[in-house]
Length: 401
Ligand SMILES: Cc1ncc(COP(=O)(O)O)c(C=O)c1O
Image (tube, rainbow, N blue to C red; front, side, top):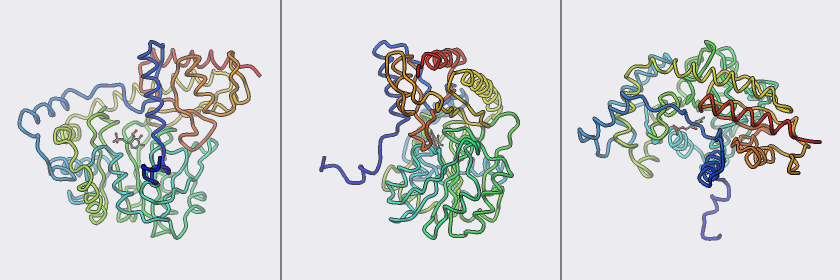
């Protein structure tokens, strides 16, 4: 329709939200559907955090705040970076937005000129390329194959850098693969970046607390302090504190960048919810001991899902270090037909047939830039995961040449 802006033709609606919606619709229509598409913890927000929000409402904390975050929340964020990442930031180096998603978007909108390149390792979080396109930049996708554990290789990064490169986006642990960079792996990446002073680092640390088997989380500015002046460290409360609906994300970086991001936010949404900010202060300053307990529960689910998927015919599933996703390959099912006669040529076909025939909703790897794979979010109950994996096994066993 010509009434709509041309920029809309460059992007598509989030495929993960689309799958979640489709699963919800099928469920509402009475179908027995297990949704493994959504990227959010199934835990509730801890009570002390919810109580802080209620106190904020009752106490009249219900007005506009500073556009890019209250002083109390910025203080709590500075303390978090020091405590958990050994990074020193002052409040004026911190910005708070309506979710990490808005913070990333602000950063791209505030920095990209037409033709500026942004390096995005694939598989990637679905929003990175589209956000870059909306900001009129050019996404430069670097494939990170399963044989490399879905991790960016220093030599591939080096090759992708051009004089037009403005940012590289890093996301460890990763959505959709769960892959996380060890200190040595991260150092190998930052060593490349040290040699290219015009490239800035946008690190999306959203899944920082969800790492397993004693894995040590690291972030680029911590591993290579000389990158501090050109790194935007992005994080949020959604995943670690089970606060996806509260919509609070934040970032820290050089003051000029942080100010520019605030300008974008001031002319679009203004401050994130005052009540949610009060809750986020409690999340960051309050007890943290439930986090490892929840992470342990995620680890058990990861192990269950990886083991059951590897028993499905035609599926191979790599065991990732973190987040709550696995990214199995369905290469062994390509070219086969389902019992109702549908032919599986792509991961899209696989995912559609699985939903139609067994009522399991997962997301096709094509959406994340590396096929033929699919993403499973295991942030759901063990019973549902077991049932879903049984159905996947049954579905795969039923495929014929
Ligand atoms: C990698 C990654 N970054 C950022 C976000 C955004 O999270 P939020 O906007 O809820 O803070 C998500 C959410 O799914 C994500 O998976």
